[in-house]
Length: 470
Image (cartoon, rainbow, N blue to C red; front, side, top):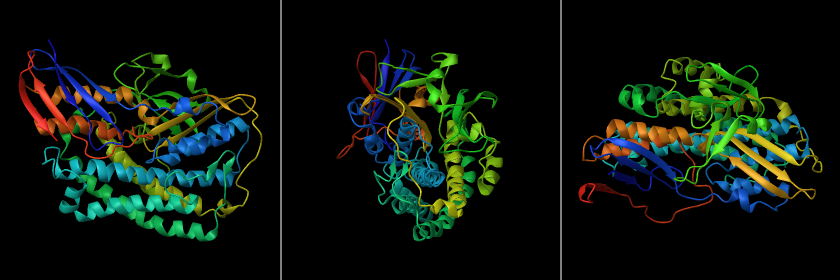
């Protein structure tokens, strides 16, 4: 008879989920699952809506990363129009997306994961939070707040709103960039880059304390997937899809986003509302792959900006299969984002007033693919003769990582759960492996009030052996 540990909810993530861990009669972990317990309804309730509403609607999937959905959605609508948007509009979308990635990475690293990294996985849970970080290292806490603020302010300058802006539209963007706004953004970039460099220097020393976690936090061979430029550098907005093996060998390169259905299939498991995509040629579940910062740095030859390239040289010596290194990869990407925004904004053509291509629908199918903070994001729309949505399919970055997150929970549980007593630090490590992926589950749902946690370890007859409450 098996026994079950339930962690409900998983804390310090964006959204609602739980983890269940099955123990056999000897007390060893036999299985574990990561359950996403909320329903995303966007694929169904957008049916019948005019296609040109999609960017604004899809931007409301999530309050943390609305820009990511705006951009993937707008790219799908560009395909429905069958237009090539003006180059300045594409570059403005790139800047907006880079600001989004920088601020989201700051949220993940400083607010959600730095309590574990600074205070320790076994620290007092009442202190293991952003307020504990503020007390232990005020500079680190202030850096996290300021870095996210800079990213959000750039979004607001460009798009007039920090959350759910309507500036990105089918065919481009709604307004051009002027010199005043460009100068305001450029003035903030050096500070953001300084904070990123300071944090990377701090994090390198932190790595030495977490050898056991590096070895066990979703550390196993998988494929890695993401967008790259033709030169093999980071590409967050457009480009070909590259897939590499756990050893870094190229499995596929230059794949087209609008052909995603030929190489990505989606499975459904009864324990979760989150779909489980896999690489179709390898089958299910052998086609497991990862996306996001770790994957992006594993597939590229180099990031493509000076400071990020220099740090990448050190990153490449790390264990490329350990999901613990998502943290390191995020910091390198933040450096890249600020450097790349500066490069784009230094070109005067970005202020050209022609920023939108206008047309009627010229295609019944439109697919948009871009890189969100958490990985490759895919929006697929089909319309009727009146331009109304008949079908929408979304593959969210967190979905791409679903198989890896589940396997990671099992790996950590099997390593750290021993016997019939639950160390609180073990519970935290099971959650922390999920935090490395920075899953975004919230979509449009929000919780109000306290989210309690009660974890019990029971005998086969129901006797309570150990219990933790939060």
